[in-house]
Amino acid sequence: MRGVPFIQVPTTLLAQVDSSVGGKVAVNHPGGKNIIGAFYQPRLVLIDINTLKTLPLREIRSGVAEVIKYGVIGNAKLFNWLEEHIELLLRGERKALAHVVRESCRIKARVTEEDETEQGLRAILNYGHSVGHAVEALAGYGQYTHGEAVSVGMAVAARLAAALGLLTDPDRARIEKLLQRAGLPLELPEKLSAEAVLDRLYHDKKTTGGRLTLVLPEQIGKVSVKRDIPAELLKKIICTG
Picture (spheres, rainbow, N blue to C red):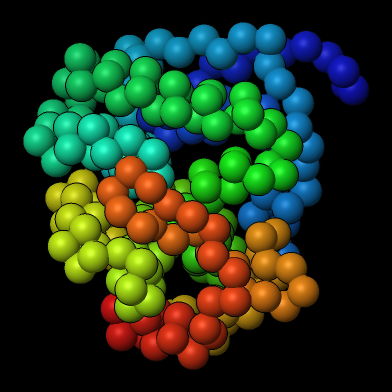
């Protein structure tokens, strides 16, 4: 019913660190992920990390992908912490989980408070998501977890940023290594073509006027929105890894 107040009670790590905060409500469509939706804030977000005990490891890894994203886009200290403690997260250690949930929510709340309806700053939260959403839609929703798809997108974006001279190769390697240690994929699924992914990217919400647009890292803890991405270079990176 329209206008009914609600409380978010996220029970997966991915929801606790990301989707429960910020007010986005949306559904998937064959034409793209989350393209039908609105901004509607909950009255309260209630997080109980005890619910994470019920999750299989694959779902924990999926949530960790979003935590890694937060480290790359705006908190180098969090990224450094993940490099030291990633195994604790994967084992479900309570203090480690509480730490990343708290830090992730702080980062997302800070960004969305400044730009609730994604007119500017909030776009940085889409690091890894343009390619990730393409993977999810092309493979069929549910074949890959959101975190797995975003991991591929983050790796592609890091490689592209390095190729463009925006990101140092050591920082690119750190991003890829941390994703690997989390048990997350770096490469496009074999059944998906680079051409199909590129076609999806031209229909991504950040791409306007045919100008291919992606969020690219410049260093650990800082990203920017880059327009006029060279399509052939991106295709080469998607194909060769």
